[in-house]
Image 1 (cartoon, rainbow, N blue to C red):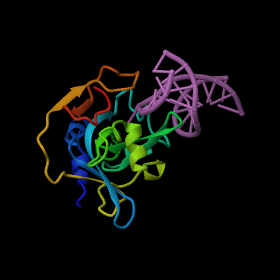
Image 2 (cartoon, rainbow, N blue to C red):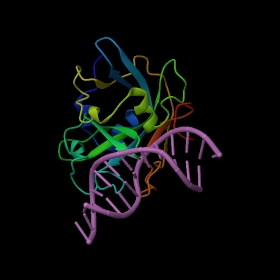
Image 3 (cartoon, helix red, strand yellow):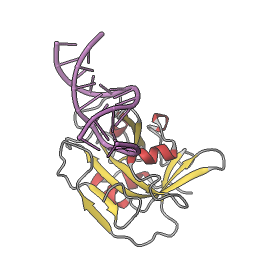
Image 4 (cartoon, rainbow, N blue to C red):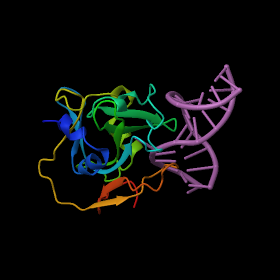
Length: 182
DNA sequence: GACCGGATCCGT
DNA sequence: CGGATCCGGTCT
C-alpha cells in the first residue's frame, strides 16, 4: 500500500481537508495485521484560526503542526479521549485536518463515528503522535481508496468549539451512516 | 504551584 | 444536560 505523498499534505489546509474524504487510513498492528477505515468526516484548523491549537504559537503539544506536512498530530482531551489529525502546509506554517469519523468495513457504522471513538477503535494514543504518515513503513498511513465510490460532500460549521464557531470548515460525506452528527 | 476549560461521549 | 477524568497552557 502506497501512502499519500507529502506533496498532497503540503498544500492549503482548506483544500486538503475535503480531499481526504473517501481516503483510507491504515493502522498497522503487527507484521501482517492492520485495521482500515474510510474517512467520512473532517475539519480544518489553520494558522490565524482562533480555534486552532497552534493559534498562539508553538508549544510542546502542538510542535508537530509547525513541521512538514504528512505527519500525525494526536492529542489527549477531556481526560479520556484522543483525537487524530494530519499536519498540512509546509514546514513552519501550522495547519492540520482533524479526522472526525471513519466508516469501518464489516463493523457497526457507529463504531468510529466521532474523533474520540475512532481513536479508541484504532487504539491510537499519544504514542502515535508525530508519525510520518508518508513513509510506507510507518504504523499509520493514508492511502487512496482502491475503488473510490462517487459521493456528495457537505460543508458545514465545525463541532464542539467555542472560538470561530461560525467558520464552515467541516466536511462530510452525505448520507454516510458513520458521520458523527447530522 | 494552582487553576481552568477543553477539536468528546454516554447515559439520563 | 451533567459527569467522567486529566493534562497543557496560562497566570501567580
